[in-house]
Image 1 (cartoon, rainbow, N blue to C red):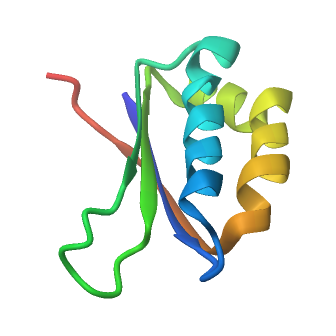
Image 2 (tube, one colour):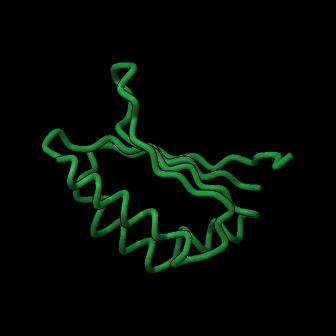
Length: 100
């Protein structure tokens, strides 16, 4: 199983309403694209200074499913239209996870 983790840091002027729209858009991606085992968008709890503001953790059965998601036009549109305009910083990693 391949786990895709993305961290987002928003620009200072980003509003809660804008983040709500991002959350709504990204939560539609698994159904629109398929091949996703698990998918979560979460906001930082605000417990520690310096953290990113939100994350996505998504599990895929294999690399091919992840690449299909990564390169899918609907995913790219959400990035371009909803996420990129709000970003100050982004970090991502893909890791192999034992599903057991």
